[in-house]
Image (cartoon, rainbow, N blue to C red):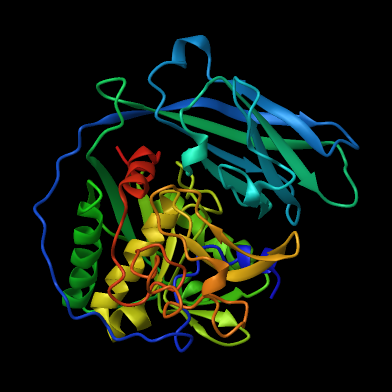
Length: 397
């Protein structure tokens, strides 16, 4: 599998059978946290014309002078033609390229390209701070033909209350959307409590909105979700399901409960996020997280940890270390999340030289972190900088 193919599986939580799942027997309970409050503001929403033959086009410059102070984070969502790969580029007021549209996955503030749509968050890495608005947002189209095209662009800014401080506590509203999966209530509550306690460590309180349910005529079409290994979160069936997030109540994070999620041609997935981050809007093809009922029933404690992992992706967190060892400038290289306080696993830890970093090989580094790619049971640690990124998310408030 190439690294680009792997990136298309950016939200992969676990492949059952790829590594051990012992269920996690430890329990803990933290007192609830109370949100300090923040304000999410739509800075731009509209369609921008990209002329024929143009691959890269500036689509937004902002925020305006009245919104330059107190900015905690920015979030972007761009959608274009079906089947068209898009990438975003961002340059700050100092001229620093924060996200390089030609290599967004390797930028100082990581962002992933996407087919048909793409989302990004600023900041998600240490090198992106301090924020220096205004920002120039560009979109890059990757296709052989470049016709004139109207591209949808949405930009949001987050501003803490009171100003000049990133909130130390935030709330995240989640809503289960029943999409063909059925889980006994005690097991679902156990998984939710597990995820809630993990995120309380980071100053985020998960609040569950009233549940909703898809029409019985739709459930059979989405209950068994097959993810294309070459496309990952760009799989058409997943994107179609996530667009139904318009049924969600409020503006939090939709959690779609399906019967099972499989990785074609074979394999099971615990859960999958629509993007890193999930956009600050419902109804898009990145809006939400899909969760397997089959695996929730199998091990609700571990499923709660996996749910917490996927929520991390939705809030803008990348894997502390990616699984694939690359060769760059003739040397093996491991890709990490760009946060200074996560103990990224080095390429030299690949003891069996299989070009993949396992949880056992990274035991002395970051395998105990919630966002390690393999998310072994009991890996629930979050660092202060990971918590900071999550609290800056446009989904939290």
